[in-house]
Length: 163
Image 1 (cartoon, rainbow, N blue to C red):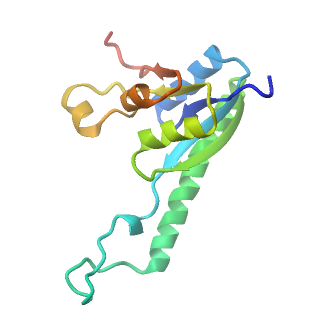
Image 2: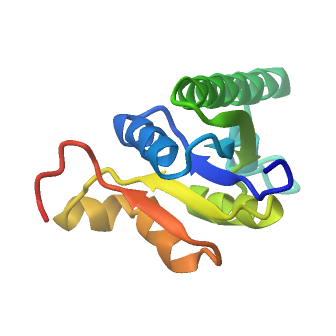
């Protein structure tokens, strides 16, 4: 089983993500598993830069502060991924935590990481958002389901009572 492609679990520390870990363990017992947390790089990539005269833009914070924010963000994502991998191992999976930088959107990062690691399936939780909330906040699980080239298992939110 060692040369078998891993499953990839998208994990953000939420209850739906925890439910996805447990569902993955039930569906793919003892599988080699990558527990993926997507993190956003620091503020420097989204802050406007001043124009060539040094005016007209937003004043940038100290670059050292930006580096600290980015390191803290990555460190937090690593802790979240490690927590997910721990839960997966406790559930019987052969799990390893990995990170992906969110260069576009989290859903695209999940799909790209699954391709990069030749995952045999993606397991992702669903927050169960409906109506306007789902339109405004988007749906990572829906995007992954419609754009991944791999099988996708969407685990419904544990409290979602709607069929």
